[in-house]
Amino acid sequence: MSKVPAYAAPSANAPLAPFTVARRDPGPHDVAIDIEFCGICHSDVHQARDEWGGSIFPMVPGHEILGRVRQVGAKVTKFKAGDRVGVGCLVDSCQDCDPCRRHKEQFCQKGGAFTYNGTEMDRKTPTYGGYSTSVVVSEAFVLKVPEGLDPAAAAPLLCAGITTYSPLKQWHCKPGDKVGVVGLGGLGHMAVKLAAAMGAEVTMLSTSRAKEADARRLGAHGFALTSDDAVFKKLAGHFDLMIDTVSAPHDLNREVGLLRPEGALVLVGAPPEPMPFSSFALIMGNKRMAGSLIGGLAETQEMLDFCAAKKVVSDVEVIPAQKVNEAYERMLKGDVRYRFVIDTASLKSA
Ligand SMILES: [Zn+2]
Ligand SMILES: [Zn+2]
Image (tube, rainbow, N blue to C red; front, side, top):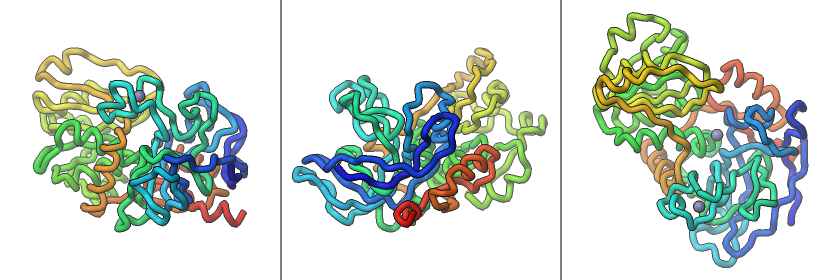
């Protein structure tokens, strides 16, 4: 066992503070990783503040982990010391249930092992995330990160990237498809970049005209101001696919009206309250509404390789761990373009 520096939330009501976390010695199938960068996801804030209930404290958040392999166990075959690697939202699963066998480890019937705010599959040992200088993870849950990707900017691919890549793949996004992305934040900016890289004609839908220039810079071909009622007439029946990243209540029925017949609206943002919804909006045109949660390990690897080939990374603001509380406040105000990433060198010097 080794003790390494980290940043942790001691309780739901206290700011994050320096903490020491114990990492196991790597077993035969384990990879020990020196963490270089860790992205800050909105779900980190919700869980560190126990807004979803059931949080485990002290909590070391972080599931957008990027680093280099320090050491591998005797039976590890895919990795060697020095390899650049990533870890996303999962560090283990039963690897035996139906979803696991279908490479959908995110739906493991035994619950899987989340990277933090959970337990290992023994259901006793707490998991601690990436706001830390190192982590030990089973080989099957470690991803290869191509060297061509900037490491700080690649970290958010491990959650924000796969969360938006997976629905684009599930609905077979292809060149020429008309894709609408609703909301420009951490998820929305990745959805724009990835859909554009797949050759889609991308439109950003936002309540704020101030987002237009950024949306176009990120690759959007069009912009629609959703506070303008005329937009819903002009773009009625327009989109093959819409990815909705908004986590505040909004009008889903109007969004469905923008889909062509048999088009799909996929929700990846999670407003806390249920939203009213009319069945007619879907029935008239065989439209589909769906949700999507991260991706399995194989799909996450496919996404990283796609991003390397297309030179897609996140737009990031790199911060020292000591600024994490400030970053949380700024995120809640939407004051980040578009993802904070912790440089873990700040923990070594602390
Ligand atoms: Zn996340
Ligand atoms: Zn399973």
